[in-house]
Amino acid sequence: MDVIRLLGIRDTSLSVEEVLASVGDHAAGGTTLFVGTVREQDHGKPVTRLSYSAHPTAEAELRRVAEKVAADFPVTALAAVHRVGDLELGDIAVIVAVTAPHRGEAFAASRRLIDDLKAEVPIWKHQVFADGSAEWVGACE
Image (cartoon, rainbow, N blue to C red):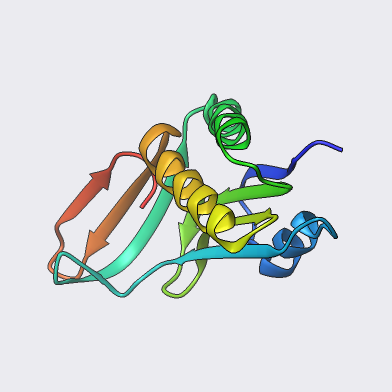
């Protein structure tokens, strides 16, 4: 069975339960889960609106990142999903989960997966602040 169990760029709500279920594996001794949510402020300024956009190649780039993590770490399963579109405060923007034989491997692979996703997958965040200013952030936050 492929260790990459679930990948996606979606315009609908993300499910922690779906992601966790996708990486379940009896060979795993450790499971890590990262859930990124929309926060109420950034740079000390209140956020009023937030939207994510993705390049058409984003899902292929996400697969490339996941394949690299799977090749570099002894994982039994991994999953990563990111949301696009308009999100509200508290909404889940990204979920990453990894299972591995041991917790240290799961933590290391999970950290690499979310960090590389943020750095390399072409997803952009547009946030509008309460003072009317706005900014684009390259790759997901």
